[in-house]
Image (tube, rainbow, N blue to C red; front, side, top):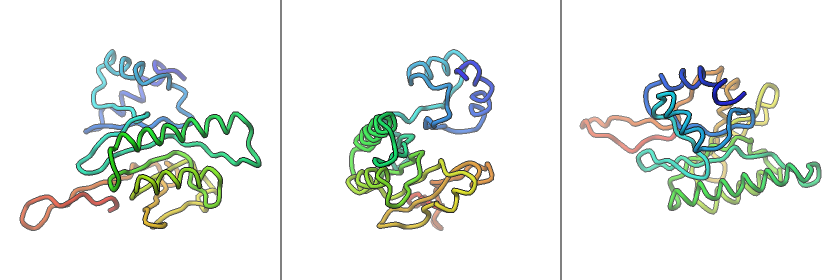
Length: 191
């Protein structure tokens, strides 16, 4: 599938109100480069679609950072997996650095942070170094949902957002509450 074949899908996404930040997944065969995606959006009149790729976006005091991630086990994976994993780890670092500081990052890596895995330890190191407070992830499907890390782990809130896990309903990860005096409080990461 290329961008033109995905036009109807992006038209549907474009009709959703608000800013849509898209993170490339491992089955997004339409993906080429960010500049080609933005040119495609401009040519088709799609507004408020943004790509999270080697960068970050801000929502109030939160920085949305991330990468698609990649599962890699040194003892079982090949050179290709290691190459992709290292590239995604560099993209994660670039995204977290773009956030400009600790205490504000929300991280949506695609690959699940499986406890004890080599890939999890390396991603975890980045989470701790940048003081990430919440990690939202996908890529666990079907029976593997039982491997989900959810809840607070060493100061980081984890939440699985795989589409089938959520019954294909979008999940709100940041919401604003109205204080009794009519002002707005700080955003809450989880509802």
